[in-house]
Length: 153
Ligand SMILES: [Zn+2]
Image (cartoon, rainbow, N blue to C red; front, side, top):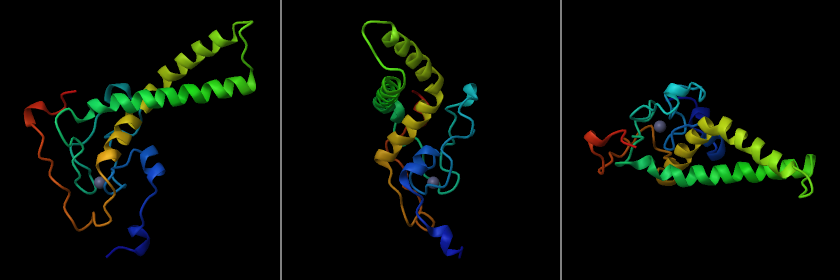
């Protein structure tokens, strides 16, 4: 058996930020680490390389990430607005509001690969929970999948 420290439960937020599998919080959800490798940014293994959790648990599963992606974009915009207001100030008498709009649009564009990945990770975390027995118990086999429709989103 492994050392006791290996049985710890990795933190939720930290696991999401590091795009780890929701079930074991150890395996990587994306094949390539760098989100700015744009051709392969969304490439995922079919199952978790550590615990075998399937990553596409039903047909079109990742369509739902649109909601998460939208929420993340709003959160980034609110944060940048507050940061802008505190540091540079905001006024309707000059163009500062429009500068913020432009800078925020560029910021969202640059962050897009990271936000897309985070959206998928957050989305699957809603449906698959951490399993302390992940080492012993096999991962559930999803029933609502269709080989022909895999990766169809
Ligand atoms: Zn896993």
